[in-house]
Picture 1 (cartoon, rainbow, N blue to C red):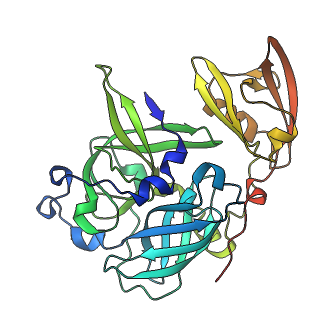
Picture 2 (cartoon, rainbow, N blue to C red; picture 1 turned 90 degrees about the horizontal axis):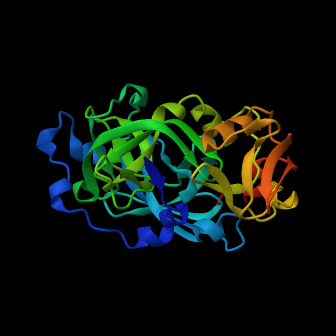
Length: 337
């Protein structure tokens, strides 16, 4: 079983005090058929500054830092979206120590990916895409931050499975790796062939057969970027209509889905949902599974559709009709400097 930590622990405060990786888990170039150092040089550091009044500032902080990977020679950097959401200032730190300014191209809420454009020439190799669907449990991989081998982990894929995040996020086939990278946000998941399989998103704990909890990383698979990459580069978001967003942060406790927090000024707050409410499903479709709940909501239509939530509060079960929104409309748009 995989238990996610709070996503605010993936914000800037952890990354500004980066934890050291012990030599025993650092990758050895002799163990790989590709040029390890060249692949690692494609990974960059990212620092972002966000306004205190930004929608995401309360949860993710105003100073965030992590990693990204150059995917196009003209300076396009792929990272995990929460690092750059609503960022006013972006700095990209290169493997040679230089820092260049960047601009947010896109943040796709459905995949979780973010794209940056470096505003200066980057004389470094781009990492090519692999096929994450072909990756198997047991495969050897490298989970890499910027800075070469000393900030990389020789790991294995320990699971591929569905992942439901409490912020209305769902992956059908997330990748989980161990040992974990201690500074995970935006890390590059590099295959044994030297190509990019995904981008690091979270640190979690996996309960093993002996009840021991092992640290793992959750990685967003690269294959889900491919269908929307051109849209993100040209439009800043997917061309299809957005999913309905409610602005609830939920947790599964036992066989119940409980609202743990509500986005300020979001649809759920406007509908008078409350922290502690138990969400039992939508309409006549009851569920105690978070992934199923998300699929029920998203199947009702596009952003703006009214969602009938079945809610239990203070001994009463009743329906709350929530006029969903487009999450993008609640975030500040990037500014070009």
